[in-house]
Amino acid sequence: MTDSEFEKMNHKEQYEDLDEFQNAKRIVKHKRIERKIRKKRKKVNNLKAFIRFILLVAIIFVTYHFFKLSGWYLPKDTFKNPNCKNLEIINNKIIPTYVINKELSDIPVSRLPIFFTKINPIKKELYKIPVIKNVYIRRYGFPARLQIIVMERTPIAIIKTDLNAKPAAFFTLDGVLITNKHYMNLVDNSSVLKILTTPQSLKKDISVKRVLEIEQIVKAVETYSNEKVEYIDMRKPNDVFVKIQTTSIRLGTLDSTVYERIKRIYTILPQITNVDSQIQYIDLSWDKVNYLKMKKPIKK
Image 1: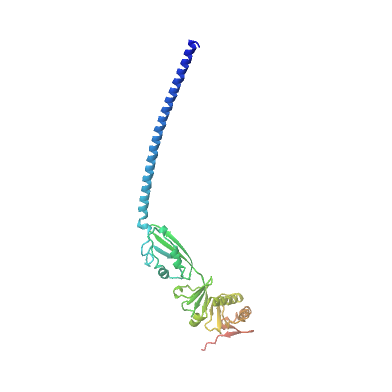
Image 2: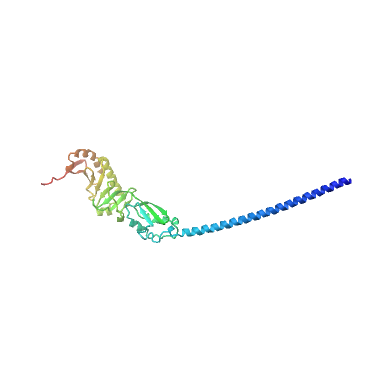
């Protein structure tokens, strides 16, 4: 190997060593920059975590004190005070409000915000009232209050001991017989059948089954007379009367032949048009025999 070649090789090795040194220097510098960036990111992340922690503590603090405001809580006497403005009872037409208040008086008021108040205990107590069919409860805040919406059973027959007396019981559309005197706050109207009976019969003979039988008889009278039944008088079990718009009908005993006797109504009603004001009642109490009972003439 000549001297020139040796020098070239020497220079080449020196250049390679220099390049390696510069590369190593660049790598060290890059590593230092990466460490600085990581440190800065760590500081930023720590700062963000600290800020999130402070915000979380602040939110919990504000939320706690917000829900401690009295507007979220029912007063302790909500169910015991009948005049409490935090309890509203609506849609009760048959049941007096004081009866509902009395039923709820033993329910304790929980020390929880209104939206966490359990409503099932309230419903459980109200469903003990036989007139109530459904209950809906709404909760409101600021001020905390409850609105109880009552859905009552629909009366289809009122039972009385006298036509002008207060109802003694009533029968509902879904087949429930109500006899509690507190639930007799009914409005008498033409859409509700009136059944007249004696106090003794009310206690002994009136039942769900019996009312259903009477209802079928009334429907038969309305079908063959084409008129609405105003009331059925059963104060004398063997001498039953039915009042329709045109006149009264004497059915007598409600035995197995009563439906056959009722069928004769549609043939008799057209005949009484001219003497309507003089007729006391149509007598269908006899099998296969019809007659009109005339009013007694007024003595002058």
